[in-house]
Image (cartoon, rainbow, N blue to C red; front, top):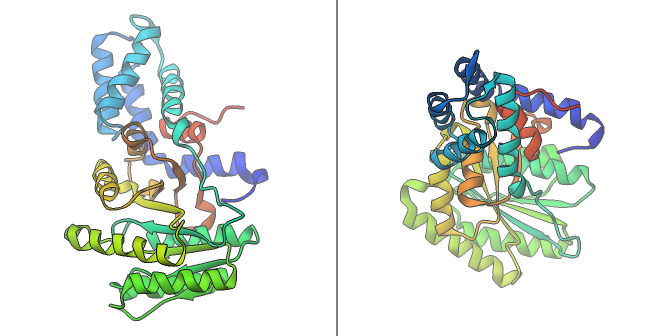
Length: 315
């Protein structure tokens, strides 16, 4: 999540490269459907099916094809025209949710609870956010609240060393709510700008996870009544439509304030972000298209829409 100079060309190129699998599926499919052909009912049906298989979701696919039919039905269309029109329509769906995670400078610390299933990229996302905030000159503390996995604790400590952030950590199996309490106390005492708290994500035992997350939120409030200020769900794009189920589940457990979508480079399922925007309308703060800190940036609707359907960046 860095500055503007390299931004346009550099980040768009990386985003487009990261979404290659998704854009190839959509772009090649559109080229196959609209090669020397009018936009008739059969073509619209094929396009709708393509959008559904690209994980945009049934409701979104139906609406996008209906939009296209309004202006171009029974006219000769070429694939580039269809891609551009789709990019514009997709950007319109995404625009309302493309909102950065805004910190309150008057609040010390800004407490950010990071949730998500195991393997979604939670700990790495925390590390990248820490790196981003440190680059802005903010003081950041990390809390290894996923106390069930020794690997998660170790990984967060490594990110702490890498970014120069103190880490509050206990032993594997320690009480995660107690650890969160200790972390908020330490962050308040030190006057830290940001506290990022990792959490466990064992969805296969929802009752236990629900009780634990709710306890963590309750305990945090004992130290700082206004916290947590942000509850961010990290989603792995490679899970496709399952990401929608995860949002629904976590919305029942905690008061989600926004999403981060990772691993967009790992599959052809980048379209799921459009389905998420349409169904839930939660802010999408950032997306990841690779392992490096430079592959993780604030989410921008137009760039994402154009990269998703394989349209070159506008001049």
